[in-house]
Image (cartoon, rainbow, N blue to C red; front, side, top):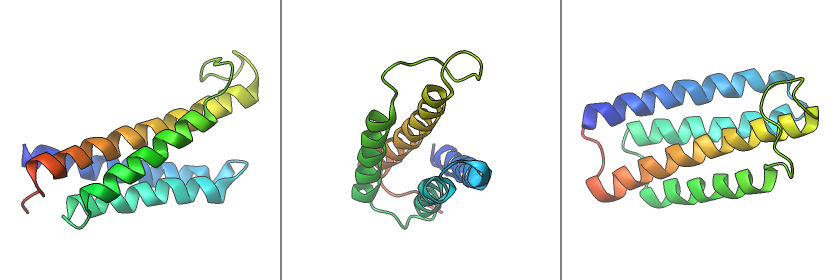
Length: 119
């Protein structure tokens, strides 16, 4: 199971870093590069046993707050052409935050209740 979480950590570190790079064409790229960049570095910290469960829980909670804040009043899906582009963009951004939050909380639970990963 330790190897599973280490591989999961690397997988999400790669996914979060790719997400950060892809934000260059977003209307507010610096904010989203920062958001995904923090998730990348914290995930790498998890893989190398350098991050506290409290930090992971707090970040998970912050990302959940961001999800709730950004979630559009009227959810119209993720695909362009299905509704208002602003609602679709907000839904995409909100669910990106939710994915990060779930990963952070899963890693926090792993660190808290199982202990740090062994290298």
